[in-house]
Length: 251
Image (cartoon, rainbow, N blue to C red; front, side):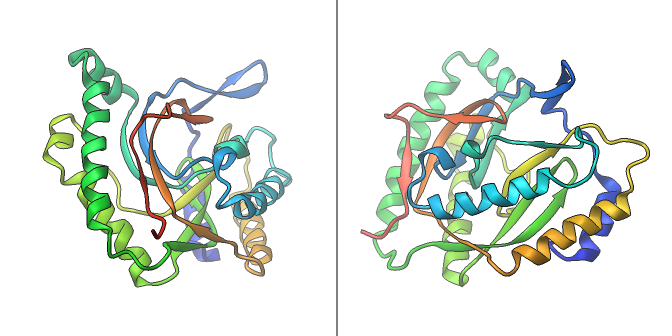
């Protein structure tokens, strides 16, 4: 996904993201509510502060590419995060809340239980869970950096965690289901206006050249904590202090 051939292929399929809409000549975040399981966002993450500083530099370089100024809509660097499990969003979330007034309360209760049980099963965790940035990837409606595990154990721990989430009967009963395979990534920007005269070949070359520069300095990312977070749009992910969370850090 990070290779020039993949960029050349994917750039043919990029689409405008409905998560950001035109407003007074600029793109503003559109309402897109829901819940997710993520690592603490950049603004609250001391463990990965060096990683996020580097990522912010990369995002600035991306935003300075000589393309239509409305093509690349960057997300606030404070919101950078790694999603470990997508949960529920947009119309599915709104429907769930309408049908079940206690939906959010039950969701929180469910994750409190899951995290407590999972924490007990992690007593043998003897290594930090480290992943590393591999490069830039193009998604249908976004540009992101891809992460790869440092070793097999780091991969297996996250896959085991995801399996625990998506196979939980109570969560399934609440309408939580797995929609995507796991592609570890951190979103830098979404696509806005895609001009009919966009030179896609030139754009993919620019992205590949950025990638080549970044390959000289690929930062490492530690997965120490995952939290249940709520969002109203794609710019901020929030939680209350008593909401469920799980520490992956070694005791």
